[in-house]
Image 1 (cartoon, rainbow, N blue to C red):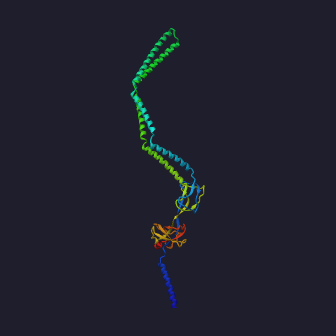
Image 2 (cartoon, rainbow, N blue to C red):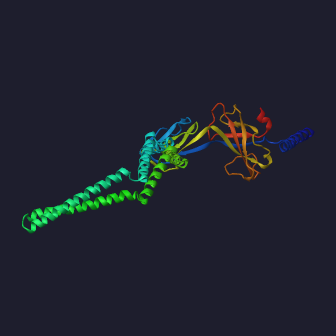
Length: 378
């Protein structure tokens, strides 16, 4: 009886000790999560018809690899048009910068000299020799007129006596009229020479000389800085339009921005894709991380803290991770999150970047994060 009592007492004591141990011995600080990778959804800013698909789902690609090519449609013709427009703007700018040719300057100077000589001629007026020559022509005209008058008088007397024909009389009359008109012309010529150049002609000649002088000075000084700047702006605008077309051409080739894996691709040659719409997605295998939720009583974590991770797929290969994000506000535990403390209703989301030198991890694997500092240092 005593022996049985001792055994029962010993058993009860062991049970009590186990209960106290379970109450006072803390469980390991551990949370669970799923390994994820950054997803990149790629597309083109121009869109169009698919020409070639160069990758398949699950294929590993390198940064810069061409994944999909689109048909250029009219981009090549527009690029050629803008190249010609740019060449024209550059030629125009070069003309403004270089200025006028030497032959153009000499031509402008010759025009100025010609008009200056004309102005000087009008200013000086007729020479004395020209006036004397005009007087001489007037004397000859008057002499010819007197001779014609005498001839006409003789022919008139003879005609009254029927000594000459009517035709001869008419010829004499016409000769007299021509001589009289010639005298008038010579008189007007002499008056013009004696009066000199009109004031209006002098002003017109002076204006022509000044216009030619300004045109010559313009060629000597070249184009204004404002005109050169305007030509530069036109050239730069044409260059910008050409660069925009070339960037659109680059968008015809959808390239991988990183080293990663094609996750989803449902595209065939001939398909139409919209501008700016994703056409495939890929995962960044070089940046794996775990999203986990820490209960309130374990929230003493900080960004940059090292933690240890363990995976069921690799139980003998513990990994080290770095906490890169800690939520500033608590949230209710998501239904798909596993924690060891069911009584905790609010948690803080954290993000742990994994250091995976062996490159064996894959998105979707379950991982346990050990929050104790001792585990991180092991």
